[in-house]
Image (tube, rainbow over all chains, first blue to last red):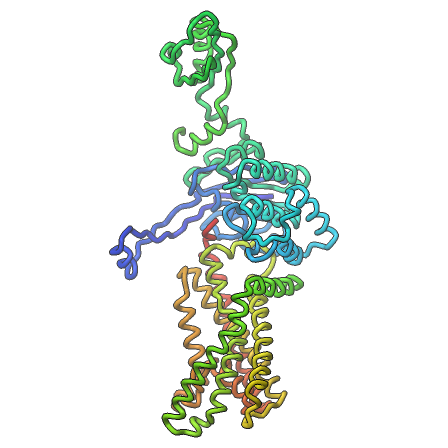
Length: 329
Length: 267
């Protein structure tokens, strides 16, 4: 449904040093930099699948989404969405896709949401009964019935984002691009939007690409992720498989039995092969190299009186974050 | 094209949302232009003790500016640089996602504005004649108004195409405010909105008629003043349409090329 092969995009950016002299000089002569936003990116997304695009700021996530949505032209490579070349922006293509941008309002700022939805009904030529059914379902799911007649610019960020989602899904798109849909929202709004996206996906089975800086969005919604670093996809696969591939540590969680004996100090717990120690009451968490987990667990059992011991995997979010921050290769 | 009607109607709702701005622009702007012209030409006629300048009596000169102010607003429509702003701040992105033509969206918005200026024109002229009476020198023929208004509407299409083409330069230059102001000044000057074209040297007037501008200013004003025939009306409208064709071609080329440089900033 979404197919991209060897996509590259280079932007030309005006380089401008700080200060008055540099500004004045730029009136006559400018230096331009070629910024490679994407390099040889290939990705495929099937119907009903939701892929999380993860990467640091400027890694190329949004550029990839913009190319696949037909907003910008790739420098090289090929993209096909629903069998169309996105940049041709064929009307049949545009009737079947949607882009939700957390950082950019798409609804008409000066109008109430209901007027915006009516306009979208005309734009997408949605038959009236179908429009009413879709709208009622989406309003109910998002809980925004009371805000429909308020100007968009007067809504809170969370309310506006909910309206944006409704507007983007009214025409039941077969491909949905979600670019940071929960950015800046409070926890309850984030949860509501995640639940809504999840329910919508189950019911309508669109192909979805989600970019987000919130790991919770990715963990809750995506079984598959693509990690972009400096314009290249460095990992594309199952979310759970990230651990097998990139986790270098395991976490030993130990409940120390402190009855009749003092709690061991951090120094006591820093056994061989232990890379980090965190103590919270009588619970100790030890970061241990994966290959030495058994050895360290045996040492713990031998040296301390314990109530419980468990071996946990590293948090996926931490692994991905480390990958993005270039801590790991 | 029901979406076209929806955008057209939405633009009214948007304009009516801001009532202070609406009433100031509806009542104030034209009155200001006419007042400036009145005091300026009053001083010129008195200083020269003239009864006629370039074929215009003082009354006809003021009427020229009345029709230039109202007609000019119909022709210029909405000059809010919406297109350039959309390109500059990435607002264009949403329209690229919708299965509609962006230029037609803008045209629908401009048409809504034109409709309001038409209402303003009708009410303004009626109010003036009620307040000051009908000038004896003016033939109040319905045909003059039909010719004038229809030509203003055709001219507004040409003005729109050229204005949007200039806005598209924002694909490369980011901001085109100065270019837009320059276009407005040159277009109004050459079309006789500031000063009747008859006042320029004959050779210059001849040259100006090789451009589209007299057809989108001086000529429709002459129609309102009863100085044109139906034959001239046909000629003027054909000339405007002939200018619209290459202008639309230029618009299409600039749009196609510009879009390839669009980066969708702000997302």
